[in-house]
Image 1 (spheres, rainbow, N blue to C red):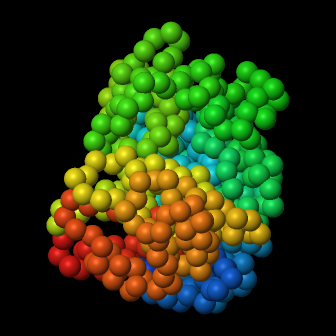
Image 2 (image 1 turned 30 degrees about the vertical axis):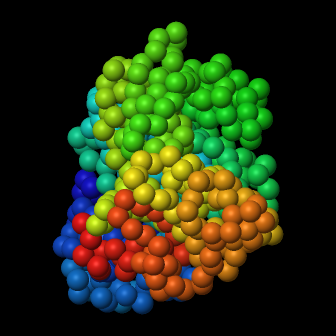
Length: 457
């Protein structure tokens, strides 16, 4: 982060500074465990904590100044504001405006992070790229992402998540995207939003921080996005696989071992491409990356090369081998759409042995949860598996769906240790297994206990 004076910060957030206006800070911190010298500690209040309780600790750790929503007696300067969370966003928006750079906003029910990573890889062919790290995509994480901007950056890829209406509108107005991408509209957060129509409305809020002439990149194969084709008009840029009337589409899709080969077709030209991952969802991610790259002036040959070197990050369908067993970790989030993608991956991934799946609860589905888990079970029954373990209370409906579809190689459990025991019992060298559930189910702990602690490579 470029340094700013306390006086500048106080003016930006309309706060009252006690003293020390010329003091400079070069980092904003909301976590006392990560404070270093030169930091401004911003005390946030959450449901289970109050950062104001840790102000003394922040100063001891080296914080140069504090942002608070109440008077504070301390030896360092204090900027007092009505609401520290809003001040964080206001300051991030102010800091963002210091930079002239191409900014791409990414949202969607499924595939936000993978698409963000692919777009960043593509833009790196012609820009110095800053991107959202991890899951910093909410009203705290996105401002912290913006504070990571430096003078050398010429592009930023900013992920935006939400769980309620109004959230993406706020984030978009902080980031001010030049281009936006909506990967799809599914059923994630249905519990909070009530309908897919409301989910669509929430995703389209990404337009609120954009100029009227800016473009939004959309998946033409998604039924909900198609419903706004007429209203968006020429503002929308479409990609697809089934729909071939947009800016770019993919065809001749073939899975080759752990890779997916296909052709981009754009403007009458054909560009053979490869993604080093399996699953049709990765082709959609690549189409979004191709579209953003083309509209950003990257040559198509460079786009194809960047996509060919793409790597999944974190807990999102990373593939590792432990003692000859191929393990696909997809433990970050889960919805019916991403479950279907996961089953497609395990059905087609290359292995010399058998294929298995551990499917856990999909959270935040509201009243439709039972029905949606049941439908996933029906899909799992057709995925060519040699065994299915359903982990969690909601996942019992996955088991019911699979069993009623005639797949009797189905078991259920409610503890992580039971899942570990099942994996040890059924897996043999040459086999492949995918583990998929919402982040709150902590399936990565199963992988750690079953494989990593056992000394696999």
